[in-house]
Image (cartoon, rainbow, N blue to C red):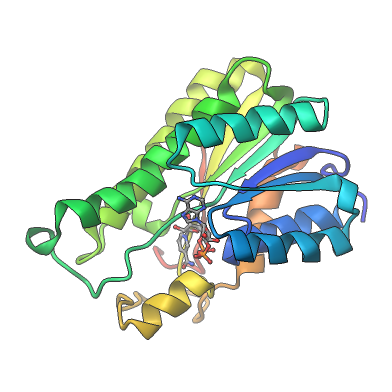
Length: 254
Ligand SMILES: NC(=O)c1ccc[n+]([C@@H]2O[C@H](COP(=O)([O-])OP(=O)(O)OC[C@H]3O[C@@H](n4cnc5c(N)ncnc54)[C@H](O)[C@@H]3O)[C@@H](O)[C@H]2O)c1
């Protein structure tokens, strides 16, 4: 299927699972060139094989990496630029982490528990943005889409580390949009509500899910439904949208 994403070079973190994998599938079907990253090497290999069959093996490269590593993230972005001999047209920064603890109030959380969530969801995202916004990496125009959360818009008791990390992800999105706009680079975030991915399935298994507030649509989201919003923000169809936090939450906050 031809679209504004056909032949566009797009990077995707968190591409081995859930929302990231669904996004990569849509992008592959629409003919994008993909540079995928994830720290789960086994799942990334599986994703790569599947995506190559949807597109063409020469259109896809994969790099196992932890977004907490400055050197790995910088090398990945500059390798992507060199490998395809062109600037990058879009970045989907989707990798994220939820601590699988049963709800814990602030007074019960250890330094290590708080730090792990912030290091991935906030500092790791910052490192991706810094590498992507470095001179000569992105095309003009281009589009960056970060995945935040409804937890970046309101507080949930017992989930302060994740809530804080996602509020910061939305803040980084807004600041980056102000800095990069005049270079032709748009920066937006998608804020999913509860979505049926391995992250949420693992939380349910550990009885760590939070009670769901009333949903207008009366059901949780599917990863493809979030991936469609990400893909729209990556494409030219959203050319006048920047600095926005797009809720894809089935009406959780209405
Ligand atoms: N599923 C939901 O209900 C929901 C709701 C709101 C926001 N989100 C956000 O959506 C994004 C995707 O989550 P998902 O539900 O698809 O989860 P998922 O666990 O299925 O996928 C997340 C992927 O990110 C990768 N990852 C995690 N930390 C990484 C790191 N340090 N370096 C590289 N890769 C790393 C994981 O290996 C995994 O493949 C996350 O940012 C998450 O916070 C999810």
